[in-house]
Length: 508
Image 1 (spheres, rainbow, N blue to C red):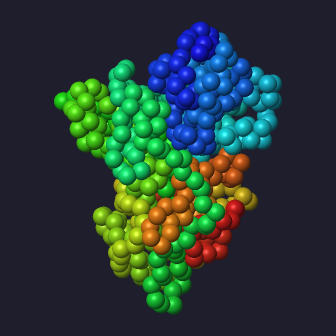
Image 2: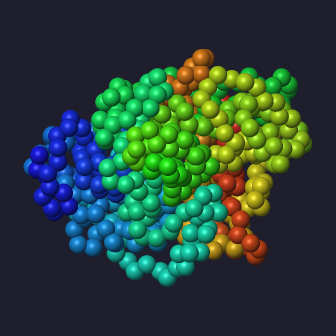
Image 3: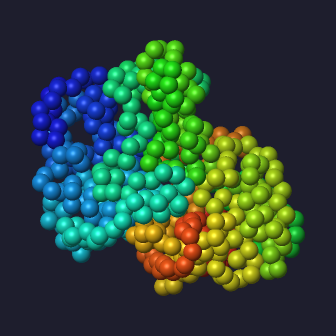
């Protein structure tokens, strides 16, 4: 079939697959990202088809035969450069995985003549996308500032601040917003085989993602109608405050991926960002190495979105009670390192680990364990106090007139744009954790929410305005966004009256 891609006429094979597969696997256009295929729910693979936004992972390639396809690389004139500069200047792109699709869609919205001040139209447009990093607000600010000169910044210092906040190597540059951060699957050599998991947990290999999934018999995951239910019972006692949480999916957009040459070392699955501690750098590496050696060719090992939900580590559920003096009990699903994380923050809480059927858990997702302790203790006191994280960063938060207000001190800011962006993103994540996020897991431990829209991540139209004040305190730079996460979670929970079970299903 013949397509016009970014102004160039090309020929692609109709292998029964999608437009996303043709762009990435046949044409090598890696700016189009795969965050959930074939769910069509995250927006990372958005392109223009004859000028209209289309989610390419659910668009059969045969449906666009002879049509014009525009990726972020082929936007007219200086559009891509303007968007990338604006997103970098506002902090509207952190890892840069979701932003190529967002840039494509917002470019189309701008081309329709949508007024700059029409933020409602922008937020409606963003409903087709998910972003875990930025909390949406900085993306809307980039819409406002499109085409304006970018202020001078030290991007090396900005990258250093991003690494402190995200816990892994992080580039900061306009190119990142266009998807050029060096994600693991984007860097695989041409001609690499693709390995995916079959239902029985065995790896199946093909020449493309489409072929490998066909051989594996992959079936798209579903979303259950059952609400998340906290799996643990509260500790006995007459407590001033009680809290129970459910399984929570970290929800990072770039699914786990790696590749390896025969006899080589697999690339890190962290790539440009570490998913706030939720992703393991060694995920899939051993499988990629073994398969590459077996086949004598480079192999890309990929998890689908459903694989991430079933097999990726979750924030461990807790059930606790506490009194105003800081004493109490916290029951938590058995997780390596979680008791130590709680003890460093709240030494008077007695932690009991128990086994519970469910997906894997980890103490590494943002502030796991100690944020739960901070929320519970705030409820027991009935008031908010500044929260200091284990790295020394301090944050205060409050909910006022439908807005979340944050003050953060993290030593030398290094770059206030990045610190503010991470603080807004942490506030967005905390707001979702308290109000809407959770997975339905049955009594046998099977996860039933397998689509990315079923995680409960707040969309742009659902996220309240977030005001951030940065305290330019003296001292070495330390992580501040984890403290923001805990402080905002406590503020939102108190504002809602401290209901025992999360998520609360209530807005502010």
